[in-house]
Image (cartoon, rainbow, N blue to C red):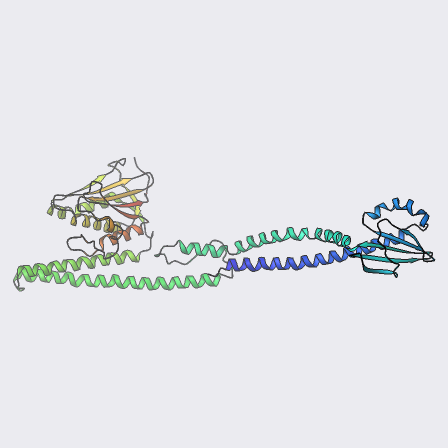
Length: 449
């Protein structure tokens, strides 16, 4: 996978390293040449500064005075005007008299740099081993490179900081998109000014999101309209069926008419659930939330399902879990119609799957910073292997009995997600029934107790 950051860092660091290497080589060569010129100047200065009265008889006494020059291993030879050698420094090689000027010669497997100077009454010749000159020149040249060696890591660190800062808007854009919900199609907004280089990308992305939002809205509107249009004729068909059965115009066996009516009820229920699901899908997460009294919605739902529970002799009730008080209204931020749909679907499922003589309870809870509720029944529960899938749309468990479309828990999950909450299903510890918990809701006001 190609990385702009690695590509920039790689080429910039390589470029700095290559430029530093070229500059270092040039500085090294220049310093080395200048050092060689300096040593040639030293040889010339030694030759010019020798005392004029050097002779063979004073060679021994002057040898001590020339001790400082021997530290640089400079060899000195002096000839008089008649060409006779009158002075040779200690440990000096036997070098014949050469012509004036600088030259490099080889004596005894060593290379020497030699300078000859003709004076009015004598000829002076000084020599220095090339190895000594090279050692001193290299030492001086390397001393000139330490600022460059310090500059290179500083330049690399500067490149890392600059590239990281320059790519920060791209990372912010990527992080913002990766944490977005699938339902959020609003335009992307970056914190601070948007760099000119990524502005076309942000504009194109926002245009794509706008088109996706329009297409998604059109699809949801179509599903909602289709569900709404289907509900009306199905309801009318059921009314006509019931009217024909009462006045005798519709003839047939009682069981046949009963099956037709059951099928119509199932289709009407499916259309209603599709309509509810379409409405929930059309609403973005966290939108249009107002203070809602959760306790009042729970009391209304329990009242609406009381007749259905009585038909099966099911004990249906509402509980307030401590430490909340009976006066607590459990006011949360939500959308009243959607929360009512959520409660109705959970109660409908619980009553359908609880045998006669069982129990279904709606329990309201308040913690320090959240409000939640649960629907607890004494039915058959759900196999542990299917708990993770029962909230999928149109999924019905292998042990599910009775009629249904598999949309009840899917609608409940969608409503909870819209309220930034979650649906948690767990089988009761005593092995009887299921508990569905919806948590957390954001309280509209603090605990009154």
